[in-house]
Image (cartoon, rainbow, N blue to C red):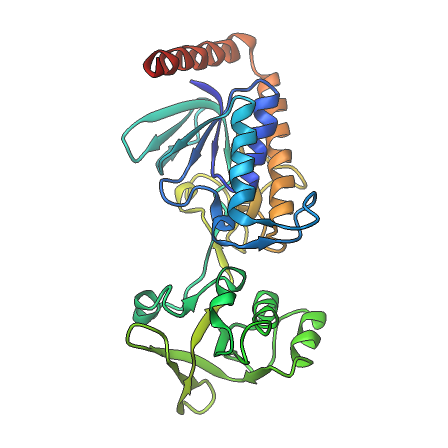
Length: 330
C-alpha cells in the first residue's frame, strides 16, 4: 500500500509527483503505456512555460519533469489504469497488466483529449493531412491552402498560427458568428491570409493517402460544396478524460471533475484532482502544473490528518516494495 498514487503524467501529474516526493510521500505515478507525458509530447516549441526564455520542446519539458519527479523518489509505471475503487478509505487502482495497487490518497490528473468530428476518413487520414495540433504540424504545410474547423479561441489561435506557414487558411464554422473572445476574433479578422466559411460543416474529408479536399454542407440551406485543401486542422475543443471515475466522482456541467473552491478536493475523501481534467477554461501547461502543486499539498495535509498507524502501514508497505524492486534489479 502507498501513501499516494498519482494517475496521469502531464504537467499536473508530474508536478504533483515532485511535490509529493519532496514531502517524503514516496508517490507511485501511473503514466500511460502509449501516451506518457500527455499532450505536450505532441507539441513542438513551448514558448510560454516560465523559466525557458528561448523556449523548449514539449517532449523535452515532459522528460525533464519526469526526471525531476524520479530524482526525489517518485516511482513511474508505464501502464494504463483500467479500473478504480475510490470509495473506501484505502483506494485501489487496477492496471492493464492485472496488477492492483492500493493507496490512502489518489491524485487524478488524466488531462483531456482532443475532440474529433467523428468522420471515418478523419481516422484514415490522421497524420496524413488531418491534425489536431497546429504547433505540432504547422511546419509541414508551408505554402499550402489549409483549413481550421472551429469557432472558439483555440480555433482562432490555430488559424492565426498557421498563417506563418500556409498561403491561405480557411476557418470553417457551423454558425455565422464566433464564440471566440473579441481579441482573438479581431486578430483573425485582420489577417489577410484567413478567410471564413460561415454556416458550414465538414461532411467528408477527401484524399488518397494525403488530404486533398473537404466536402462541406451548408447548415442553413443544406447545399453541398467542395473545397480543395492540403490539410485540415480540427479545433473544436477537448474532452476531459473522466471515464474511469464516472459514478464515483462528481462532475461539472462542462464534464470536468468537480473540486471544492480553489482546492483539489473532490466529493470523495482522500481523492484529489488536478490539471485539465478539472479546468474547462484555461488548459495551459503552467496552470496544470500549478494545479498539480495544489493537489499534492492537499494530499499531504489529508495524510497528516490520518491515524499514524494507518500511514505507518502504508510507509512500511512502500518500503518493502522498494526493497523487492532493488533486489530484482541487482
